[in-house]
Length: 393
Image (cartoon, rainbow, N blue to C red):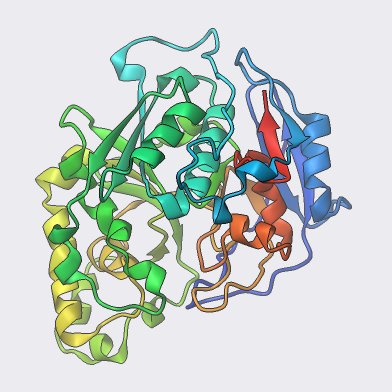
């Protein structure tokens, strides 16, 4: 299929573009489906779910998945957070490897995510989407980071995904608490948002590469494709957005300083989103990147050189020195900006991952009965028992 698409970044509190009214083409095959957002198609956005179901082809798994309606008022728990009821989420299907999958340790794909009660509903949807679209779901190992042992959260993961290969690691918040500066949104100031910086120190040394993913996203393509991206000599791979106004991620204090802007000398810095990253863990450790990020956080405490939370230190250390990958792997900004979280449309181009970065989260907007159009793309992966749309075995 020979078509060209133009992709553009969304506003992330710093830049924006005028988005045309977009339409949808669904391409399906035996392994996965991908959505293309085209300017010439005549299919409306809200028709995606019906198209997805009518065009869905089975993955190379032994279990089929369909959309259903489930209402169980007895299991109602506000916002999908885990409380005393450990059956808040319904059990996911058992996804099995296809015939072409290997069984060696080198075939394993390592995925890291944070884990807490407030965002667990998003994590469950993300994990389900990754498994569903994977050709070799049994080759996946999940590494979850949390700040404390939460028995209800652990039980929910085990009961929802009985066949999931996963490990949980405790992130010591004292390592970062004194380094966190107040940002434009309180949620960005939580210590767990900074856990990705310490990932290489938490997971086993034998793990050489890992895909870090935020909890407010869904994968609609085979994660093995992302795993296989060529990092070259770089420590990170992520989509870059060089059209962004990079200067507004930092304050006038930063740009007026005679020395600090020189950190970008010798590289062409571009914005990238830290919610989807492929990391060479060995290079991160040997390059002492955790300390490099921490050093800029110390400067921030003294001089207030940026407004956002955990992102700017990554830009200071790595912008212009990562391996850029296709924008399809992070259709970000679907949660709107960091202040109001207003609805946004999708930008054109092929899509492999949908990311609700920003203030608005799809499960909260759906529960409030004031969803944005894009939130209906997240709903089929929602395993929360009280949700109207969910997958059933």
